[in-house]
View 1 (cartoon, rainbow, N blue to C red):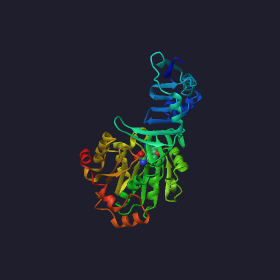
View 2: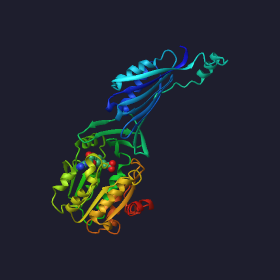
View 3: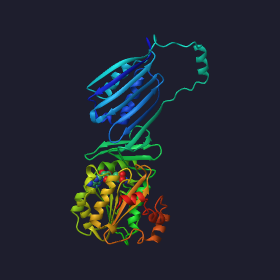
View 4: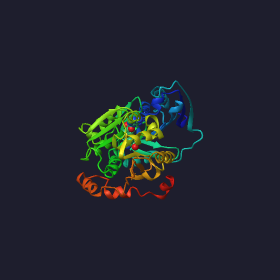
Length: 426
Ligand code: SAM
């Protein structure tokens, strides 16, 4: 060869949109493309960006293969850089063209380090090689694959073990379960984190026990969304509760949770549970006045099927089906990550419940973007979320069930808001 290395710059057009947004398939394809070409793989680092795109690099003993994808344009830019005759980057090119289902590709090869331009220094190569072999560590292939959720300016990433444990495109969303290194198994819908085994208790304890220990005697509870089962698991622990109606639009979420998140799905067989697979908006509009003591809106973000769950009309209907002591609690996103939506949701709640009957409380959930998560507490009849808390019952319950996060002190403290959040709520 007349150069030290071969650098092939590749553009793949009209690829499969699905594949270009699938971090595991891309990682597997890039690693296989390297191996097919005769390279020795050292490690791979790949990130998926929510909602679109994958970036990654496979480090090979003979240099690297890198990719960045734009699924929305069905386009991938790939760099294949190899050194030494035995590794042929064009083998990787053909392999990837097929793997990404590209209709066509364009490419050019640049020779790097042309031998007539570089000069070998006067070193004793056999001597150098001997020394290197004495301290030789056989490279071990390590995978480094990341799930990333981001908005325009902030990203949150978690490293996971690679191939998803569950992946299904339902009529509503793409439901996936990943095995993460830090937070156990994690459920995602359309690339947004729903819950993870190691910190789900924060969200589920706070979205349930705060209203249930404030209402004087909660008997009938409606949960909208919440198909992972965590919210229901917490509610059925309350002796006063006679019935929980769970309305989840997507049965694939329930299936994924039952199959891979058994600690969340523990109460799907509980006799207090009435499970409805259907649209929460429709269910609420068809329910008679004053039917429920508490409504918990445990929904996805306000896009797709959950969009209507954040609307004025829906809040009016929810207010109507609460009884006179009724409380509505909803997850209201991150004040920093979803700042505009956060502001809008509260403005709508103020219109329906009245400014004085709406409070916001916070909990710290590492797997949700920014870690700071918010919930609204809306009361139909001026029940105060802190002054009316049933402290002794909450104390006994949190000890008896060995809760991870909720306690009467946390309940109280969660309504103390940082100044910047207070300012967003005026
Ligand atoms: N803890 C989560 C979070 O804040 O990220 C929410 C988890 S839970 C799995 C959200 C559920 O709401 C999803 O399973 C989704 O299918 C469901 N959902 C979305 N829109 C809905 C609707 N209109 N009616 C009922 N369920 C809905």
